Image 1 (cartoon, rainbow, N blue to C red):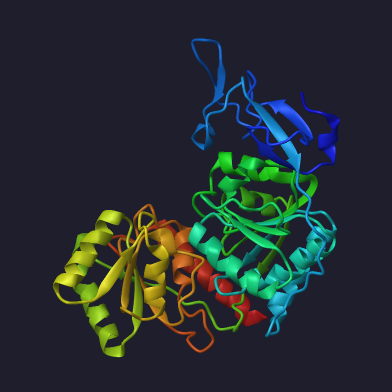
Image 2: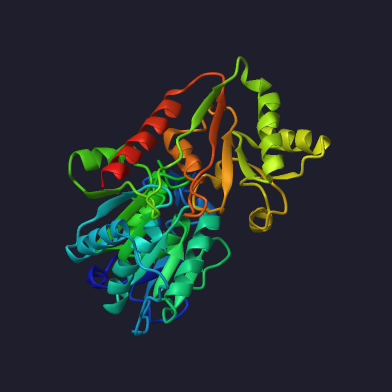
Length: 418
């Protein structure tokens, strides 16, 4: 049974009692619902026990277990933001939009092109919430991006107690500001006054009802969610079109230079990509210019790495299965090698100073419109390196390729009109 105190309390959920100071306790699973992940995917075994199938991998949970909910108090600190630069006019516009939405208790979607500096646009709304002693969580679907963004906040919010949550790292008790993957929200119940969900269209959050339920469960009844991405898709497009969510588009990079428009290179057979790719890479070897090479599968990435190594072209390969991602990214940033082959794991959230991007089998289904836009956005991000090449090699020109190019061109047009 859930007590009425939960209407105003913020709580951490535990499956095992760690003290008698819990606020309430509820049956973990009932016949029709799991109280940990809000799923109705309940299994009744031969003994009449009910278990949740959706969150089973987070630890067995059934109707014989109890969820204990504890309050988490944080110290009120004199929070501040330290910046050694000024926001651009467009960044200020985005910053005010997010702040106004929070103050009016309206959820919103901020679309900002790759390189616009949308992370910087969140500083003032987060500062406002923290100064009210509210609980804030910044959510990112991918661990590598989460770590990178959190480092910027640790630098810019020197007084704030910040914790980063991902698998194996769950120390959050005293934190004013949390950075988390959506999976880790499973232990929070109506905890946060403000959630900022970045890269909302990225795997694994996109089209994942389980993770969406965890986000909604962790938000206080009167809390606000601010969504962000460089692209808009699915349900959000419908919500924006129907004006059921506040929306702002920022079409300009912080340096106001145009987004790089991809060039399509058609091949009679996509598997014959190696020769034209090699010509391009040899040109970049002469220029000592780095290149990210995106592939649709781990198998192809390993094959390409082997072929390039066989002809003495130094390179590396990164994927979701790489156990040393941070080292590989650091080596590429240090220009230890010119070429880095990647699956879509590096499609977003990472910045390299001066690179080109190539996509092999760009017509493959893994390369959605959003993914191709994000990949294109890796190029030209720095003011001093605002130019570069984005090349899509494919046998056919897919609708996703066409749509990604059209949207980039549209944003460039809007940027030029400002």
